[in-house]
Image 1 (cartoon, rainbow, N blue to C red):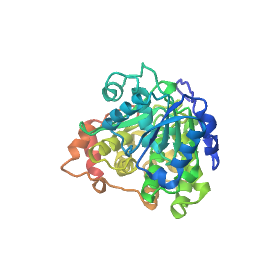
Image 2: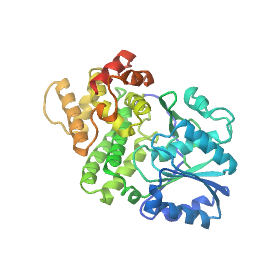
Image 3: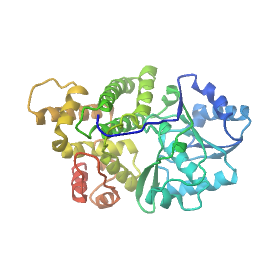
Image 4: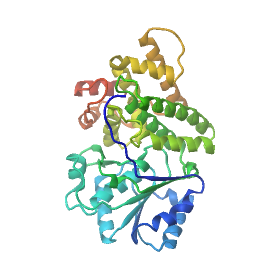
Length: 388
């Protein structure tokens, strides 16, 4: 391994079918005024909402609510939530939902006591919070983002057509606890389930496809990818298979909690491309990543050929003896075949991108270092055209 790193993760994970039984004990550690944050109401249909209210009442909490947090939470919704939380004198935020709800809760946590515009401070200038951060806890209902055990928050500004993520440095932005019951993911529609699965795969790939050293983090990443592929194929046939859904949920958490990036440079351009698509179209996040994957990895493969060969051998079990380019292509083809099999969107037209708004996506794409090839805007345009 090369490089130097510090690893710390303070989130307490409570995993399993009976994990909700611990909620009252966890709530007892925090203040009286709790703001419950959730999405469009599916937790009410599933009964999770009632379980939360019961626990909050038992813990003696005063509850306020921020509901209808959308899949791509907006800066306008953030401002609305800040007003609610301030009025309630919020001591603790309980986020119940998928990654978007938990991302929103983190943005809310750093914004409640911040007098400046949080969009400008945190998502444009990428400053760190210097005011009180309200603690949060999460109850996960969709596996994908890993937001239950990291400090990342992605917010969309619909006025500026920008979707931007901020990975906060402060350990106080981590959820203090996260409750992970795989059964809570059973009611997800197939489209949302597979979008989450690909978000997991993309998280792993974007840490994996960087560097040339023999890195333990890469071996961990390969194991996670193999587990995800196997479990995803079971889950699409039987969404109620607990073993498969629990493996997917656990993989999602470890895919993006800073473990497998230790000693890595990281390449997050698939996410930058996908988030730009989401900013323009409001498309489902995991599907935006899937739609640009083939074009992006085909473009950078010559610059990181040895790692793509390793990917083919160690993740997709490509056995044939051939030149490196052929082996690498076989590995990528294997991934693309898996993506099609589980039902992912494989082109941008299905998500609402076409010739008329493609330049908006180009403009919204943030360019990053870290991968085998740093893109320029012309290359971004080329990749997006190839993804139509």
